[in-house]
Amino acid sequence: MKRNHNRALKWIVNLSFVVIALIALFPILSLVLSSFRPASELMRNGISLTFDPKTLNVDNYSYIFTQAGDYWGWYWNSVAITAITIVLSLFFSSMVGYALALYDFKGRTLFFTLVLFILMVPFEILMLPLFQLMINMQIVNTYTAAILPAVVAPIAVFFFRQYALGLPKELMDAARIDGSTEYGIFFKIMLPLMTPSLAAMAILLGLGSWNNFLWPLIVLRSNDMFTLPIGLATLLTPYGNNYDVLIAGSVMTIVPIIILFIFFQRYFVAGLTVGGVKG
Image: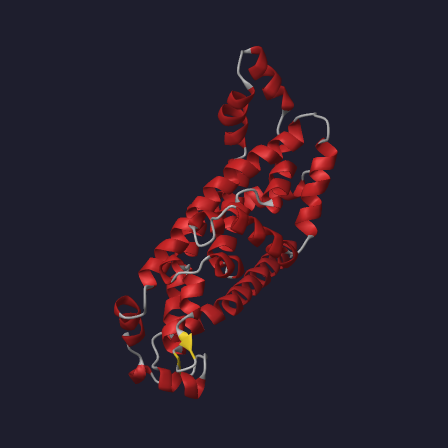
């Protein structure tokens, strides 16, 4: 009797997850279907699952690939900025978080408090001073200006610090006895142990950088430097709202995020779970 009850409960839980997954996937499915619809039908029925199969075509994608401004240039800019941001932010943020967790030095508490303070300040408040800094450094309209503020992300520092608190200090002591340097301890021993946290944060940082619209809009000026979100926004003009092309272009933006998640999904849940319970 108890066995049947557990089996029924398991079916209910699985069914609930399936329903939730379908609800979550509905906007994406609707977006993909709408990307194959002409503008006239899209304006009439909106973004929905109601459509005439005979009207579906690939004209929107054909327009993107051949005529939609510098679409592939924008795509490459987003890929390059996101990739560089992920690598640099993982490198520097993990070092800072690791040091805050496992090294005793003067001002450690104050430094960590500053990290938490910056974490709680909205980016809109930091935006103007950051932009003034970019002007003073004379790097406006460069990839450096788009990447530099994200090189050490407060949320990543906090996450890596929480994760590193769970790493065994005995390994550090054993490595020092064997003659390893502090950099050797970090790169050869501790950093491999932080792989799940690196994978989880790579997805979150990549998602944030890929979808970032406001900061690149401020520091990037020329059309050939635009990232994909800014470039797609330029398709909407006072003389023609190309929502059909915009939707097709938006569908293509999902692909890199899916690839990134598939690549790191093995460590994603483990990284978030372990990093979230250490303190």
